Amino acid sequence: MNSLPSAEIIIVGGGAVGVGCAYALALAGKRDVLVLERADEVGAVTTAQGAGLCGQVRDSVERIRLAMHSVATFRTLQASEVTPDWQEVGSLRIALGERRAEEFRRLKATADQAGLEVELIDRVEAKRLFPQMEFGQARAILWCPSDGQMTPRRVAASYRHNAARLGVRFATGAALQDITVQNGRVSGVQTNLGTADCRYLINAAGANAAHVAALAGITLPIFPVRHEYYVTVPMDGLAPSQPCFRVPELTLYGRVRDDGLLLGGWEPRSLSTDPRAFPLENQPPPVVTDLPVLDSFESSFTPLFPTAKAARRSWYGKGWPTFTPDGRFIIGESSRVPGLVMAAGCNDHGISGSGGIGRLLVESLLDPKPGDYVRSLSPDRFTDTSWNWDEARRQAAHVYETYYGV
Image (cartoon, rainbow, N blue to C red; front, side):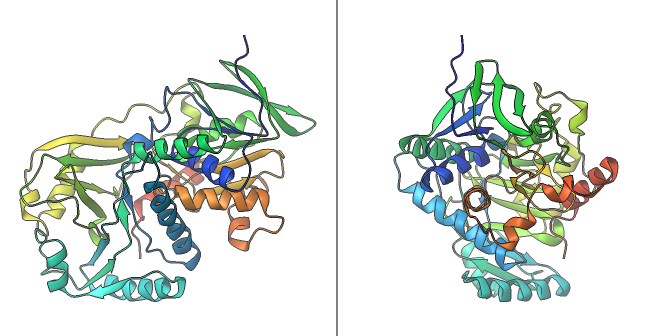
């Protein structure tokens, strides 16, 4: 028996990006929206593994303003009945060498242009903000007071609650099986719960986004790449009000979580998986905790945070965020298959960037003249050009490996 309602817009994927897009569409007046999530609740897969940091410092005005919109969204959601646990604790970005310090000066100039408050602070002020950290090696420290952190699953739950209040419908336990294309245009979906018609299908399927695009007849280079972090048991003196931090030369980031230290990083030799190696009905292969990699994070960080050495760990975070060969999102409607709209390939900015991604999605779909930046994210850049799958996978892995590259 068919238990799915038809809708003008069907979103495939109930992670932070999918439900964030639903919320953004509802705010824009598009209320005939149905979100399909094959898990039993939203935010239960890749989103649940997120580290929960949100930083706004980027190397372009467009990216900074996108991140600023995400922060504004989290602030709004924090005032609702179901909150994302948004905590605006600020963030410290620490440079250990002169080349990175010069980059920080450029980043500050870009932030000033975008209207984002940032400040280059001295070691004394940094020590006041994070007493457990040793800043003797720091050549420059960039402070952004409006950065923050959140609880990823609560981000998805908050989006769902607030989108539902505006009329968006949700179907969990709904696994996509096929996409109906009539006269070259997407017209509906087939799922384990039945069929439903739609005018637009938004592909926010995360690690399965390449599979969903293939069902509609297009090939997109969206590659899951392993990412890991760990959380220690509570440590003396750590408090949830302390800022997040990033040490780009060590490819490390972290924050206080549950009174312990959350520490993650970007591996110089990444591990990716080929979406062609597993079917749509499956998740990517399980991520096996790589203790040597995590131990290397600890070893690199210990000179800045001596008590991190050998601190007992309480939890390991691990997942498959997706990356693209050019390091840019894939957002917007396909000209090859009208009605297929992408919101994928987030390059590990899915949770923190979900508010801004929703804004870009709305602009791409509803604005008759979207801006140059939005147009640059179109899936057409891959379907209208020739590219090699294996090379694209290598390039996507390189984007991960050089995440903090100058």
